Length: 74
Image 1 (cartoon, rainbow, N blue to C red):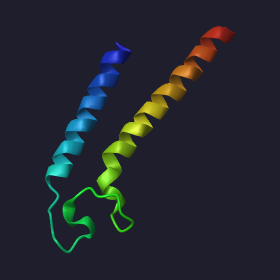
Image 2: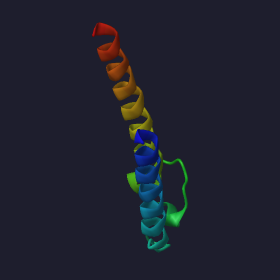
Image 3: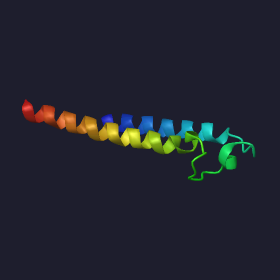
Image 4: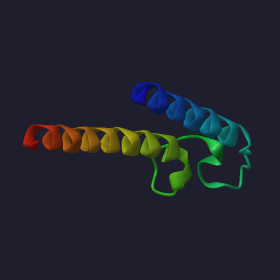
């Protein structure tokens, strides 16, 4: 049951990020002109999805280790 809830929440977050990404414009006046280029003047917004994915992976790993320690100590 917990796995289904996790994957449902993950799918909703991915769809939400896809819809928000679809609303961006490619204004030539913006840094990187809407492209995902690794330069110093690009905004952090180009890597938000990757940061969110890293946060989900980190939280899952941390909480699973915490839960396994609690089971061992009981």
